[in-house]
Amino acid sequence: VSEAPSNPNSHSTQPERRRPHGGRPIRVGLLGAGVVGGGVLALLAQHARQIEQRVGVRVEVGRALVRDLGKPRVPEAAGVPFTTDAEELFGDASLDLFVEVMGGTDEAGTLLARALSSGRSVVTANKALLAARGAGLFALAAANRADLAFEAAVGGGIPIIRTLRDAASSDEVVGITGILNGTSNFILTAMTDSRAPFAEALADAQARGFAEADPSLDVGGFDAAQKLLVLAMLAFGQEPVPLSHDPSSAVLVEGITAIDAADVEAADRLGFVVKHLVVGRDHGERVELRAHPALVRKLSAWAAVAGSLNAVKIEGRALGPLFMSGRGAGDLPTAVSVVADVVEVARSIVAGVPGLSTGLATGARAVAVRPLVPRADLELRYYVRFEVHDQPGVLARIAGALAEHRVSIAEIVQSEGKEGRARIVLTTHRAREGAMLASLAELAPISVAAPVLLRIEDTL
Ligand SMILES: NC(=O)c1ccc[n+]([C@@H]2O[C@H](COP(=O)([O-])OP(=O)(O)OC[C@H]3O[C@@H](n4cnc5c(N)ncnc54)[C@H](OP(=O)(O)O)[C@@H]3O)[C@@H](O)[C@H]2O)c1
Image (cartoon, rainbow, N blue to C red):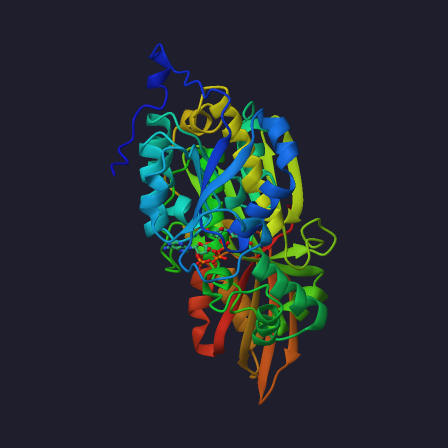
C-alpha cells in the first residue's frame, strides 16, 4: 500500500466532505487482545452507557484479531468473534474503525496502512510503529480523510498527545522533558531506595511484572527514545529518524545498563537522584533530541516520580511549563487513553466528518527533517566517575586534562577503591560534550575501567 504523502489540506477544497453515518452503532475491529486489548474490551463493556451518551450511538467490538484462539481472554471478550485471519476483519464492511494494540512494526504497519487507505480510521498504542513510519501513516490518514489517533503510544494514561495536539495548538512548544520508560524508572527507584545493583533490581522488576523477559528495548533507552520521536513529531514537526546506540547517531540514545550502585550512591551524596530522561528542544534551525540517564536534583519534581510512574513536561513560549505525571503503562491506564481516542474518533464518524479531529490536526503541522544537534555540541553539566590506579598525581592529571579542554570542575571527591585503586567522582560546570569526551579520551591510560559519564539536569 502506498504511503505517498499528499497535501493534507488539499481535500478541504473539495466541496463534499461529510459522510453521514446514519445512527448505526460504531463497530470496532480490534487488532490484538493482550494486555492493552484486554483493557480496551473491559472498558468498552463496563462503560458502555457512558460511552454511548458521549458518542450518540453504541460503540461495540465487532471482531478481534489474535494469534492464538486458545488463550484465555478477559470476561468482556465473551460474545466477540475472534479470528486469526486479518482478511476476516478487512472483509467486514460493517467495521467503522480499527484499534491496533498488537505491537510490532511490520504486520501492524501493513494492516494500519490498509485500514487508512480504505478510509477507515485507526486508533493505535504503538510508539515503535509511529517512530518508524509515523510521517507516512499521517499523510495516508490525511489523504483518505481518516483519523489516526495515538494517545496511548506515549505515557500510557497521561494525556500528553491531546495536550500537544489540542491544548497547546495555540502555542509554540519549544521544549519536552519526560520520564517515559516505567521499567527503567522502576529499576532506578529500587537502586536508589535499596542500593541494589542493576542486575538485582532488574530481576526484581521482572519477577514483579514491571519488566519484560527481554528488557533490552526498555533498559537500552530505545522505548523512551521512540516516544520522544513521537512527541517531537507532534510538538516540533520533526520527522522521526532511525535510532541507534552509535555515538555518532543524531539522536543520543543511552540506557541504564551502565549505572552502578556506586553512581546512585555518589549522586545521592552530591544531592541528586539518577533518572532516565528524554529531552527535546526546538532551537529553530536545529532540534535537540536525547534519551539517557541523568542526575536530577533530589528536591525537583522529577525525583518524586517513583517506581513505574511516568512524567512529562512541555514548555510553551506563551504557556510556560506544564508538568503531568501518572501511570505510563498497564492494561487499564493505557486502555483509558485508547478508549478516549475511540470516543473521539467515533464522534467524528457519527458527525460525518471522519479525519477532522486527529488527521487534519496532525497533518496541519508539517513534518520535515531539520538537522539534529550533534552530540559534541551539547552544552550541559556533567558527572564523571573514574576508577584509576591509586598513584600520586592522578587527581592533578584529571584536573589538567579537563582544564586543557576548558572544562571547569564544580566538585571533586576522591575515595579509596578496591585493590590499590582510587575512585574519583567529579561534577563540572556547563561544558561542551565534545570537550568532555576529548578529556576522557586523554585520560584513558590512567583509567582501570571506562569512566562513567552522566549528564546533570539541574535546571528542569
Ligand atoms: N502493555 C502496556 O502497558 C502498554 C502501554 C502503552 C502502549 N503499549 C503498546 O500497546 C501494544 C500492545 O501491547 P500489549 O502489552 O497489549 O501486548 P501483548 O499483551 O503482547 O498483546 C498483543 C496482542 O496482539 C496479538 N498479536 C500480536 N501479533 C499478532 C499477529 N501477528 N497477528 C495476530 N495477532 C497478533 C496477540 O495475540 P495472542 O493474544 O493470541 O498472543 C495479543 O492479543 C504495543 O504496541 C505496546 O507498545 C503497551
